[in-house]
Amino acid sequence: MPETSNIVIDIRMRGRKNSNGELDEAAIALKKNSRKPKGSKFSQQELPACKPILTPGLVIASFTIVGVIFLPLGLASLFASQSVVEIVDRYDRDCLPSNYSNTPLQFIQSSKLDKTCTRTLTVPKPMKSPVYVYYQLDNFFQNHRRYVRSRSDKQLKSRQSEGVVSTCKPEDSDNGKPIVPCGLVAWSLFNDTYSFTVQNKAVQVNKKDIAWKSDKQSKFGSDVFPKNFQADGLIGGGTLNSSIPLSEQEDLIVWMRTAALPTFRKLYGRIETDLEANDVIEVQIQNNYNSYGYGGKKKLVLSTTTWIGGRNDFLGVAYLFIGGLNLLLAMFFILVYVFKPRPSGDPSYLSWNKHTTKSTN
Figure (tube, helix red, strand yellow):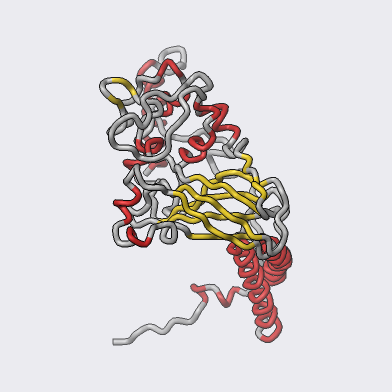
């Protein structure tokens, strides 16, 4: 059909030339409306291209190379992951007084009860500094659409935009005045605290530079200060120092980088002293955060790191699986090629060359 239409257009234009042999305006307009592509190599799909032929040797070599590369990577990743020393302690249940074991909400919502809890941890292996301190929450859906949207990035970044709270409902204003920072994400700020003692000596936790540098410089303004935060009757989580700008409130910055999964860890700080094997760590916890209302769990995590980060066996196992699978496929194709060879480019294997029997009536 396109070729026929082009022929018709050419025939029409032949009869629309003036006395000087030039096309008239109607012929020029008809030529402009033509969908005939220009006669270039690109429009005619004549550009040079690489068309590799998958010979048995090339396929076997490709699988072998992938296997040889992935297997050492998998072993190195798995070894690095196993060398990470990690201590995980769930404390939300054990930090409840025995008389509130059946009524945890009554305990956590009371401002008159002492929330101090002491836990004892034993270091299984030497932990070289820095030792990273995380808090882990389970069954907390920070990726919920309504929760993620309840914030104002403009307000967090600039003092002039502190009144931009239209996306922060229901935590947008208090007595007609905007809340800074507004929204459910900031309102639910994690507020459990940890202090560590080893051999009756206090161990300091460095909370500097625990947030992303890009977040501190680009997303949180140095001229934005907390206002009316947690001032209403319903308190969600932690409070903020109104004399410190948001760009220096690193606990808030870490919390507001919302997690993608319902089980997540967030960095609390760093212990910058080595911990020896069998050291007894006494942790004093202020159990303030309400994870009981939604059936969540709270865990304290102490972990070292390697070149792949924290403990993550999945990466090494995945490399080993892919590398082993490729080597098995390479061996399989070698056996097929040796015991059941076929000549390359044999036309007898083409579908239209195969003998087909026609049904006779």
